[in-house]
Image 1 (cartoon, rainbow, N blue to C red):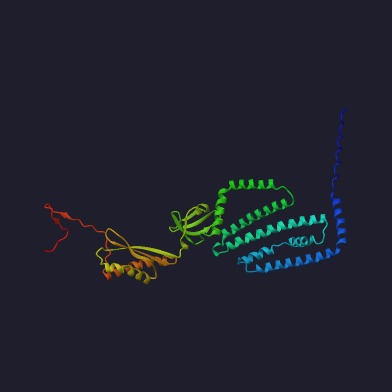
Image 2 (cartoon, rainbow, N blue to C red):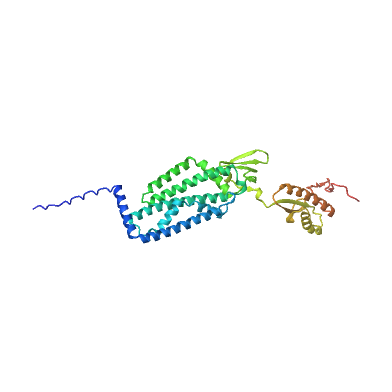
Length: 383
């Protein structure tokens, strides 16, 4: 006897629900909801109205915080600008979402509210993030020496880059919240970004170096700097290169990346100029006078308006006893330091002459001997 198998019949396909049916169901459930929860709905509307009023008042407060002559870039102004970018759509959706649960909203209508609130929240977050980032950048670049064509061009490019990045992230977050698989999209964006970066890595390297100069401020227009074996005065900071006027008159143009790769000495940033002196005195100088030389040097330096960082014996040289003198001149103006150095040299020579202190120059005495071995003196001797 053969056993027979019963194959279950396939379930009939579900008929697709058309949009008209969905709208009719939504309308019916909404009418029933109004009839059943009319009191909760009235209370929810009152609460939502209060929320909307409070959010509008907060936005007006933000407008007052950033109401100025357009030049101030403090953090309160930035916060005010962020708050003023709050959209009416977001305010209304926040109020509706806040009272949605209390009013016992039907499931279909609740899903619609959730969808529109998610859309409003993500886009509003992107707008706030964009405004805060741009405000922080403007706050960082609000110094007087960064107001020019370069910073205007940089800010235009920064606005574009920030907007693209922020809203791209917002779009990915929104799609993910709506249940869309964004793995492939994120991977595609990453590969595309890498390809663009490799194709224009030289341009981007100089661009980001320019942004580093603008934000980190190792130097600014008008500063005197030394880099590598070169030095000069900063004339312009561009997006691709920096122009430096050499002390010999030439205009040096160096790529921003290459400039930042070097050790940069900002001469304009010094708070004093140090002038080194090495002063030798004769070995025949009496010890009592040698003891007084550091005090004499300090006295002369202070008389000329400088500060003696060090004044004292340095070393036994071949023809002299050397004293080291380090003089600090306040400020960074060589137009003051050079004349002070010249006056100080004259003062030292004058004072040493008064004290009978001899500053020797290298000398050499040759002694010869006669055929009989007696020493022949190089100078006549008295009898």
